[in-house]
Length: 417
Image (tube, rainbow, N blue to C red; front, side):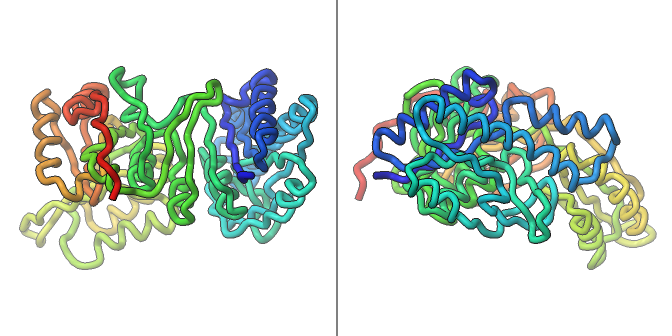
């Protein structure tokens, strides 16, 4: 008897008929001899509708109240899903974040899980019920409702799977697995059978929308096997798992892109110790995340050495970040601040980069070959990211995808040692 966690996203529960389909899938898994815990998201479009109501009241809603409002979407789905399971002849119990007691910090709208008390889930399973848990939400030490950020139901599912020692966490969505890139952007994209936690983590952080990044972090930390698959078919999807020799042989596993970055360029910052620290400390204090950071070589001017500092922040945080950036730029004596939202970050990811030389050169040559200028570059052990003009998004993705042979069927895996 396996212990399974099954998570169903917004499109999978987007109507009563789809919720009834979810109920049948959950019951089929239970009747096959498994113990089943179900994590549900809000019905598709519901979270946006709820947050839209808040913004009709005030342009800048208080974060605590936003969480109280947004969490109701998953509450409705959990109740409906439990009812649907019962209507199909099963037994189910709906549980909200505070009932399971998913304890989080107090960072409203993007809280992080600190601990999970799974006793009520365990009790439901012991009674032969399917536990239906509202994803995306938790509670802080003061009893306030918190939410885990966009895609937070993935995080709820994997964290609960880790807490209860599940044999697998199945993420049901509207796609049938993880692809080498966005199939809507590149028709030659292929479904990947298996991908490592490390590669999936990079792809998720670089714009791939299949899994939320924190869910992958938790899966990797606790070794939770994750199966990404379609809610609308029985076909196998993509397993996200520990790396092995066969995965290391793939030089580039996928291409990702992210249109949610904005570039900030501080011109003529004094080149002395502590200046850059002051800039990013101000952003950190305001809880504004920063991604790519580049500092140019200093130029000697009449008033001392000066350098340019370029970095990226998410467009969703830019409006809040601008006053902070402008103030700190003035304080450190920058001669100008320039903002550019018309950019995209394109990235290649693969474990094989560790042992194959020339990957970066090939990426730059491919982009140059179709006339795409690179504005900024950042790398890690298994990824390379470039900032380019947004108008080149589709061309860059397709060029890199097919240029690294991702459109071709993979060679048979070599024998395992």
